[in-house]
Image (cartoon, rainbow, N blue to C red; front, side, top):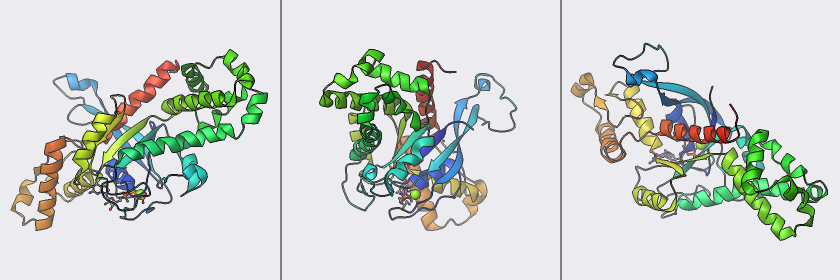
Length: 335
Ligand SMILES: Nc1nc2c(ncn2[C@@H]2O[C@H](COP(=O)(O)OP(=O)(O)OP(=O)(O)O)[C@@H](O)[C@H]2O)c(=O)[nH]1
Ligand SMILES: [Mg+2]
């Protein structure tokens, strides 16, 4: 099994729907109200990497985990956790229990409701700016680690090397912690001088250190969900304008993907996840399709597949983050 990816964040953003689509199962319960998920759902998803045979005329004969397009599927563990609400680090919602649930993750998938129809607590609203979710969630993560450090500040001042130990509890390795200190410019000399630094300056240094640690320890993917709803396209433009190329974000409609997968299981269409089209099966063309059902897949074709191409980009999302993790490992000179 490869990396662990935790699909997370505020209630009703579509985390469980995303989980079901990525794992090709209907395991997670979905609901139009906040906190449908309490206990985490854990399942296996796949991402694709190019198989060497993609460059040959003949495809290799791998029996499992191989597509006709010359891709290999690599398994990853995906976990769908309960929603996070602002103030979690002060105990709101499931509080620190939620944050502690994240510790086993290698990559965090931030599922965002791009339609702006849910507020930060997951309650129905209109015209909510989903970019705010990126901010407050990063603040929650930041405060979780920052507060843990500052709670022990008196002890750290007495023995400054203890500051390094404060990061060992986040299921990481020593080289990554070292990299966070290096990128903040904290040397052994800086550490030893810590007791003499004025408190506000020390706080600034710790904020910078926590930012660098978070960036390295928890690469984040933004899954911009519900792209099928009104306002989502306008909000997508705002995201593209505000965030730089280093931010990994992909528009998705987890609900549409679940519908296409189900229609495929029912034999109505032929469809491969990630493809930019589906074919109506010859046999089903003769069948009288249920009106609503037909309308639904025609809408997905027109508003999702034709606009966003192969919209189900969980695979490429994960691949992008895999490279983020790999680059951290390379920077840390790990195998
Ligand atoms: N239109 C649309 N609705 C979606 C999409 N994904 C999820 N939903 C709907 O959003 C609502 C919440 O979905 P869930 O997957 O249960 O959300 P969640 O984030 O797991 O919610 P909690 O477990 O309560 O934190 C449900 O009514 C879903 O049908 C999507 O891509 N498009
Ligand atoms: Mg859920």
